[in-house]
Length: 318
Image (spheres, rainbow, N blue to C red):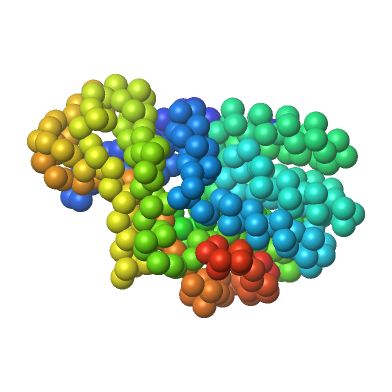
């Protein structure tokens, strides 16, 4: 595996994010700190909940259109950003290998442990495929992706929605700079829809998403010696119609003080004060096409699931 970040780098990033986010008003934290082992397990549970449609909808799109994606791109190398277990990606690997063009797969993820397990499983499942894991951050390390011929970069799961518009612009511009003319981006994007469908996907009846949301406080406690009381925060999911995104927040149920001795930081919360932990932007085809064009991509093909809940865009550099 190619290792671009290590535990010390992650620790520095966590310290910087916590200092930046918990010393301003309103307070915030980036969603990447949900995903320790427990957070990843909780998110896997979320993807199986009846309210959480994105995973099933995206899988339906890929299952229906993977052969077309393989035919259109004639991909020799598939790169996946934020790969995790690469479960859905096997639909693409199967189609591209059947097409006879694919020679290598490059999964990138910040978790070396998860990536190592995925690389081992994929190497065993696809013995004729060269699998090279990259331990890195898609927000920082796109320029270090292994070079190749006719690459397709897959960025799935609607993760693009966790970025603010300026962050999306920077990400897409950096990705375009890392690709050659004619190479491809396969982008999964959740679509704007009725809030009655959207909000329950982030506030399920079983409370799994609430536990997932509070897990960021447990991560901070463990890594920075904190004494946050996760039970003293309630989970909130709101639809912002103006920005067309879901916000997940943690709302303090009482006046309280948390201490982070590793940062020499004391954080005060008033009763009812909220900490934003995630945004999840939803998209319309025209708007996403414009964002891609501004970064130097041309929207070539667009697919949705039968319920028009989730879109998968195939865009070409150049």
